[in-house]
Image 1: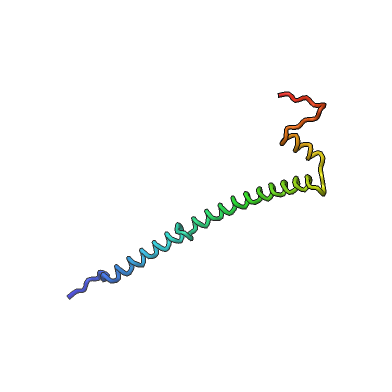
Image 2: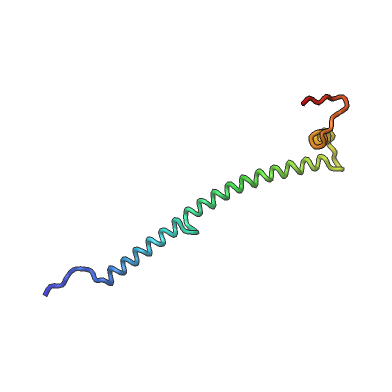
Length: 99
């Protein structure tokens, strides 16, 4: 009697399940919620938000500077003149407006 050298069904099923689990975990590590692609997206979003934050901080600093220059303790007359011209549309009596 001769025995077949074919692997048993249990071994084939075991290696097939192990292979499928490996494929699943590899896919999850690359494209899952916590995968490599998601980390790259989060890093890009973080960089964009950092740039937005820097722009907003610069705008806030400019507004604080203008506010301080128009405050009661420190009044910049040139800035006051500029603001009254732009906001209220005022002109001096010796000026001519051309439209």
